[in-house]
Image (cartoon, rainbow, N blue to C red; front, side, top):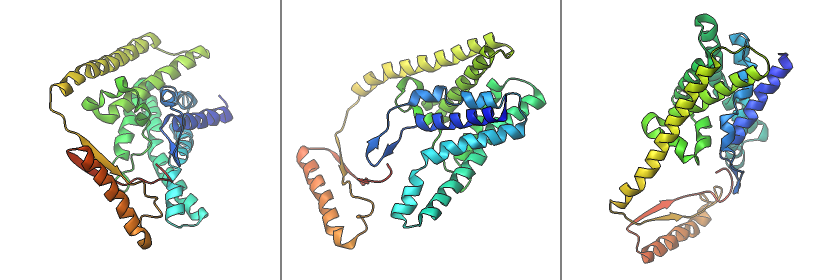
Length: 287
């Protein structure tokens, strides 16, 4: 495969992974594309087949830069619109953060390729293990971690898929997504004429994993409503002021902002709720 084709595939994966995540800009919610996460990494995994670990790292880094620059756009808004920093400085901060996160996550495909070259085995095993490990590390390092844009967040509406999180956490969902992408990459390689070993056992194992995930999800969703019905409930009220980020610290608006929350609390009191909670939310800017 030509280098230009490898780069194009890696960048395509970054775009697809970015689009799969839930995104809202200034109140506009982008279409739900969580299903893309099941195929988003296939182009990247195809591009790193039969390449050196070093090239696998560079291709993965390029892919992750697209993912993080696209999904963390709100960093620019936060430091520019609300932090008052110049556009060039704000863009540099976003690029630096994306580069740090990309450097960490790109180590996963590179490590998987290194382990395959050194010890043998299959990428379908090494990739989900390495990727999940990188996500766990990213939750704590650097600077106490920055776990945003985990591909598992794309499945927030796929209730049957994410029920396993009560057993294996969000990282279990990540593992399953990467495994399926690795398997589909093997299938795509086979269709392109490449010899792929043990494709049938891989298909069986993939089917077993998916069956277990969806079966457990169905079980949890079926058994949870009766548990709720059998226990007492309470009514909870939430006061959401929708105070704009650039207005909440203005002294001349302090009384107005306080009145907004007081009026909301009074309406809750009249409705008879048992627990009241206050929450601030920006009416514009990143969400």
